[in-house]
Image (cartoon, rainbow, N blue to C red; front, side, top):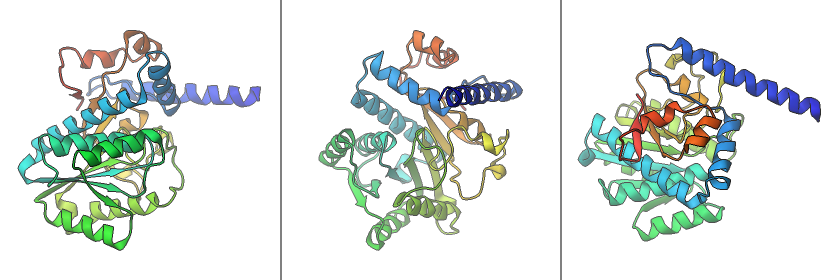
Length: 295
């Protein structure tokens, strides 16, 4: 057991060292600290156990930030009046963030007529069930399951949109790569087909929440690069990423033309020092919104 713990500690140090070295090489960009998966999990726990946030508070603020950042991205690439948004929600907290984001998008700058939520599977956690109930009461329109009827409804919605934005809220930092379980393996394949389709692809932009779904959070096995063509085949290539609290290591592999936002100003000065990410707080200086533009 002691040897296993030592090996894990060494691996974590290597991940941090590799990340820091890479960022020092990227001198053309402002310094944006990132954290590996194990720190992302611990930071989430610290926000709840040390700072006394509830999971509902974190989810509500994060989801609202995703909605605001998505609206900003739509306004910078098209127009809200011409856009349709499909929020794809997964089984965990990332999916809960998506439910909140969809509620704010459909009741804010957009409307329920131009926002849909694709829910491949009913949520099992109590907090996600509550977020689903709130969204339903707010009038959010849902497409459920992965059957032929659901896929037809999605295609019909996309065809009704002049520009189409897909909010990827399937998996977050708890996903470590490897085979994807049903029904989300089908969902990811469908999203990949949308992105590469001759008919749908040109008007489709993907906004991923915290971690592009299917990506390894640390992704060190890819090698140190930011070349879009070197992202392994079979993975989503987001046009925008909304990192939450602190960007994760995999954000270093975003191509240079990817829009990068940060949502959720949760860090306290003490936590920022503990995780050595004090620079994150500089980005929030003088900001009144729930998101900031990183690149």
